[in-house]
Image (cartoon, rainbow, N blue to C red):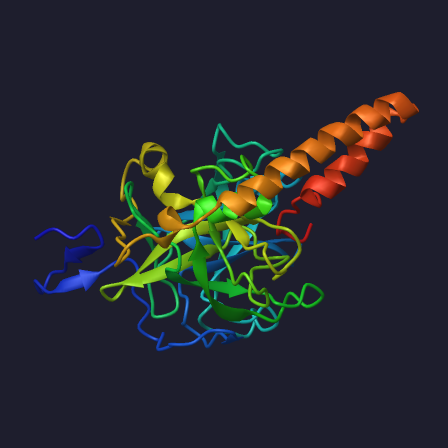
Amino acid sequence: NSHPCVKYNTALFLLPVCGVAPLNTKIVGGQDASPGSWPWQVSLQTNDFHFCGGSLINSNWVLTAAHCFASITASQVTVYLGDQSLSNQTSNPNVVSRSVSQLIIHPNYSSSTHDSDLALLKLSSSVTFTNYITPICLAAAGSKFFNGTLTWNRTNSKPSDVNTLLEVQIPVVGNRKCNCLYGVGDITDNMVCAGLLAGGKDSCQGDSGGPLVSKQSGVWVQAGIVSFGIGCAQPNYPGLYTRVSQYQDWINQQITSNQPGFVTFTSTGTDGDLNRNVAPYLLLSQIFHLVMDHMFSIGERSGLQEGQFSTWTLLLRSKAFPERDVI
């Protein structure tokens, strides 16, 4: 029986090598993350400033978001592993750091649509696994995360205080529903949405690149990468994440040895998103676009400058869809 996340050690015992957090006993969310709860979580820093998160996927590679590197190069980045608080890195014996020897951004990444928002970082040297540093398993191609599937995200709930790291449990929001909320066509199959429709729990500034994870049969699996959203924890605007399972082939093409562990995640029950009555949302969306078209024609007739009008409509339509880094 070959499991993609286990291998035999010299004593012939099964030894998990991804998706295992021995110190994680959490069953509810929205609280401080205790040391070792999320041992794959990393902090990406430049000049001792945290700008994005990421996840350790084997002893040499980190998975993160492409948009984190709009203005930062690999040589400027230090990766911190094994940490729980950004305020005590120098005194924490569980923390190790590495520089980055290679940055690979997905060739189809689009900064305007946020599609394919992922990147790989190769560490300057391999890390040794401990209770505080272990890799996460990745969702394999064909994985299913149904509407309502519970996931976990390690988050900074206070944009003004990036040292406050919390953990939060949030449900997946189906792509059909999410498309209706954000605007039909904005959410692609390469994305996954998660959050409470009532608001209150979400990823936020400084969380970009971090993992969205769910547990299956005792193994933690990464479903998404924190990408973008409207505000933080706003009602009817769940967070948007890069759907990891769409990129198994690409990741394996970049990492040809000691490849990450991929696990097929299968949600239980039926996918409520497929049965959802989206007609009212679709109608509202169509009305909205008709109004935008009408406003555009009015703008042409009233002599509005193109730049003025396009900026106005962009804010109305998307509220700029901010990414979730802090640079």
